[in-house]
Length: 332
Ligand code: NDP
Figure 1 (cartoon, rainbow, N blue to C red):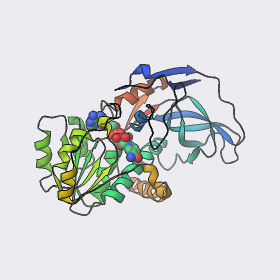
Figure 2: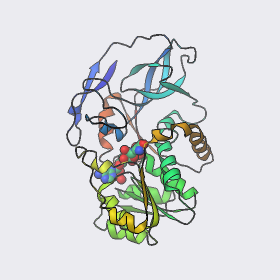
Figure 3: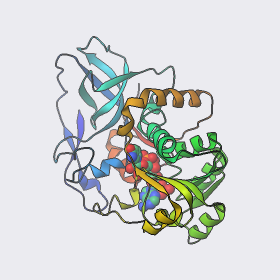
Figure 4: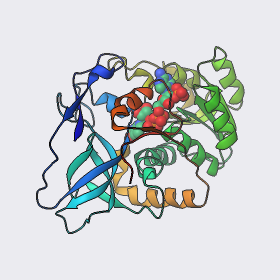
């Protein structure tokens, strides 16, 4: 079976040379473990941060060891009383065709309630990130203006829809015309602007004619600079991600914000979804309910083939994905 290891620590944008495909024997099970056959792998921007040797909220990947991330799979062998062959599970597992996991490392999922892939997106880590960042930090009120960057991605698309449910006016920022159309026509955003156009700043100012009360930031950098010029008094800013700087060797850049923050009495807070682990169950129930009621829509971009995992990961930095980027590794 194949695994993908971190071959070296990338400088700038990772390349195919960052990854090494390694043949390994099938993992042996110890007591209370399951053998998981990988069906879908999640590729996520935060994984770029784990490729460098820097202190963070999560330790770096080790060189020449297997990369780990969100995986949905099927149990093919079990020495655990809690899991049986054929169960579907989700967990933070290896970028490998099979992983031996302890029973604490996986959670059973029910394929009859929602498609199994949703546990890597809208009902998984990215959906929870949107939920907590927006509701706990952004706190959108009816009639307020909410701006979200990275709007057509996994987190951003959920942020905008929840903000609409709360009665806010929602403006999405994304990088292609196709994404702009999707946000407005499929997800019901009030406005969407393309940050790659020369007219971006004017377009944003026009869309946010009443200013910005909540900014959910997925990208940082110049996009965020532009949003900051439009902040209203008592604006709330949820710092979720800064993908525009992830390949700049850890150097954050962007908003020159002190005077703006003071003038607007704005509140800015960074967070990681793990901060909210104690409340995951409540949030998952809400997200599942909204999904089943048709209040939340989601899109997945699915690439096929284990060998295409690195490519799918790199595509996040080109914006090739609409919604959640996944890789289908095996049929079930
Ligand atoms: P997405 O599905 O949004 O994919 C990444 C998107 O980022 C791309 O599709 C692309 O869209 C956009 N992008 C890439 N490069 C740039 C750039 N230089 N400037 C502006 N936009 C860019 O990923 P996720 O939804 O999984 O993650 C979104 C953000 O949230 C990331 O920053 C991630 O690290 C962060 N995050 C934070 C968590 C937390 O706990 N705080 C948890 C999960 C995610 P486009 O075509 O529009 O450019």
